[in-house]
Length: 282
Image (cartoon, rainbow, N blue to C red; front, side):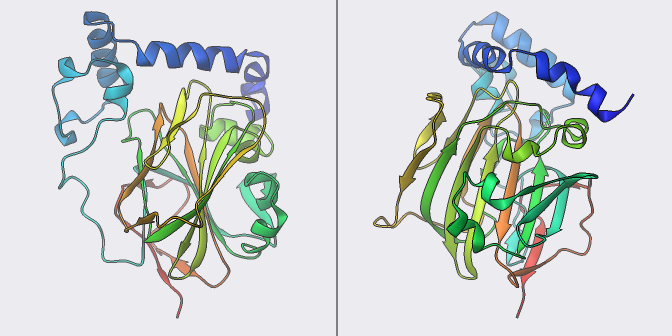
C-alpha cells in the first residue's frame, strides 16, 4: 500500500473533534479508570517508568499528568556541546535549508515562511540555514528543553490541521509540518536567532510553554502572536521550555553557517534529550 493511500483515512476523520475529545479525557481525574488506562499505555508502549521522578503509576490523578511527567534529575545528563538534542525521540530529517525549502520526505518539502506562519522577514534570516525535525513517539518523554542558551523574543500560534505526524504520514501528506497547528517560538542566542516550532497532531490535546502555560486551547482559528522583546526571558541550555500533552514533533531552524551537525546523526535514528546535536561553526 502506498503512503498516500495509507493516510487517506486521515483526510476523512473529524480530527479537531477527536482531538478535543481526547484532550477532555486526558485531563479527567477518573480514579481507578485513569490508573487502568495509564497501566495499559505503559505496557503497550514500553514506557520506562524507572526514569520518572515519580514511578508510581497509581499516583497520577490524570493521564496528562502522567504523560508530561518529569524525569529524575540525573536521567538525562547534558553533553559537552554547543547544541544539544532538546527532546527524546527520533530524527525525522535534518540538514541544510535549500534557500527557503525544508526537506520533509521523498517528494515533499515546504517553505520556512509557511512553517512560521507567513512572516517572510523572519523566514529570510534562515535562508540556506540549517533545520532539524525531531519526532516524539507515544513512549517518549514529552517535555521540550533548550538546545542552547537563548532569550525569548516572540511566540506565534498558527492554526491548522491536525494530521498525525508519524513517519508514514510525513511521507504521505504534502507540507505536513507547515500544515498542522503549531506554536512558533523565536529566540536570540549567542550564534544569532533560532526558532523552535512545536507541531500539533491528531489527539494532541494542547501544547504549553513554561512562560505562557497552555497555548491551545483556545483555538480561535486565527493567527495569534505574543512579543517579549521588552522582557528578559532568558533560558539556559537544557532548561525546560515547553511540553506536549500527547505526542508530536519539534522543528528547529538555525541561520546559515551556524552549526555543524553531530556526524553520528542520521534519519530515523533514536535520540535522547541532552545528547550532542552539533557544534558552532568557527
